[in-house]
Length: 154
Image (cartoon, rainbow, N blue to C red; front, side):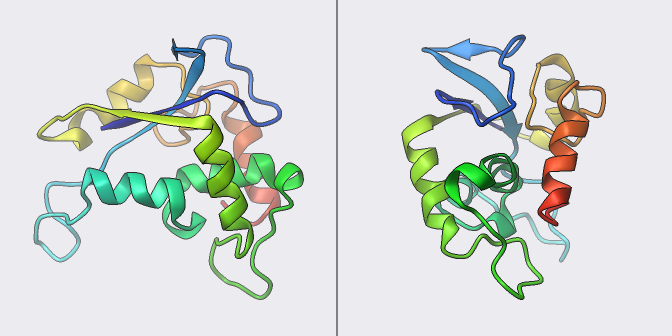
């Protein structure tokens, strides 16, 4: 399980109630494996390293965190969905998003043998504006869902 902390926050994000470490607000948690076995019946190949790499420098196509950041930073970073793309990539804007994350994001993690078992309860106990799943009652949920929807990123 990993936790994302941010120094500078995207527009509209209120850190009140968020856990904080070294001047960074905790906004999102995720897990490396989504189930004990993958869709093919074999153990999931998602490692902590691959998930963090995808969030930091991959594409919004494979990262709900990048989708969220992209939706909230779209105007500021001039992010747009790739023209004609059916997917959720920001095309050339992915580089700008990665640079913003490099300047503002920190990640921490803990090892748990079955992170999918505890994910919902961890999200429920913390104040996490960027988590949509398991977090419908969060005050930022509808605003974030609307921002993602405006860019066709739901």
